[in-house]
Length: 144
Ligand SMILES: [Zn+2]
Image (cartoon, rainbow, N blue to C red; front, side, top):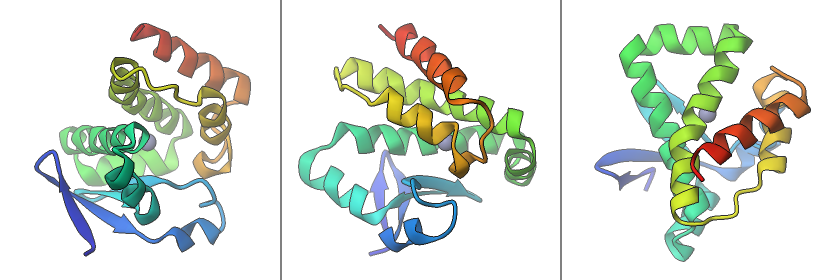
């Protein structure tokens, strides 16, 4: 099965080997066109353990989709790919509902690791690590 239903929306799967491609080492979820996609092995883990982290990941990707729908998928995707400030701000915005869930479920999300990924090559180094960590921490504390 290439997709599952989550919150009445289809969530597609992509295989773990994608993480062996350049710049995709930490890829766990993505969106394109009207589709949310999650790495198969992570999704399976969520299904098995009720892993809150993956639920948050799906919520994060669905937030991208919703914001893309409002702006227009093509325009959003173009801007996301070409404008690093926009990409970074969208990432922070999509972490908001994700963090809200983690706080509600008292899930100890790894902010340090996320800041490393968000400031790294997967997102084409939009800001230094220190700024990513500070911004994520501020957002995290908002839902305290
Ligand atoms: Zn994102």
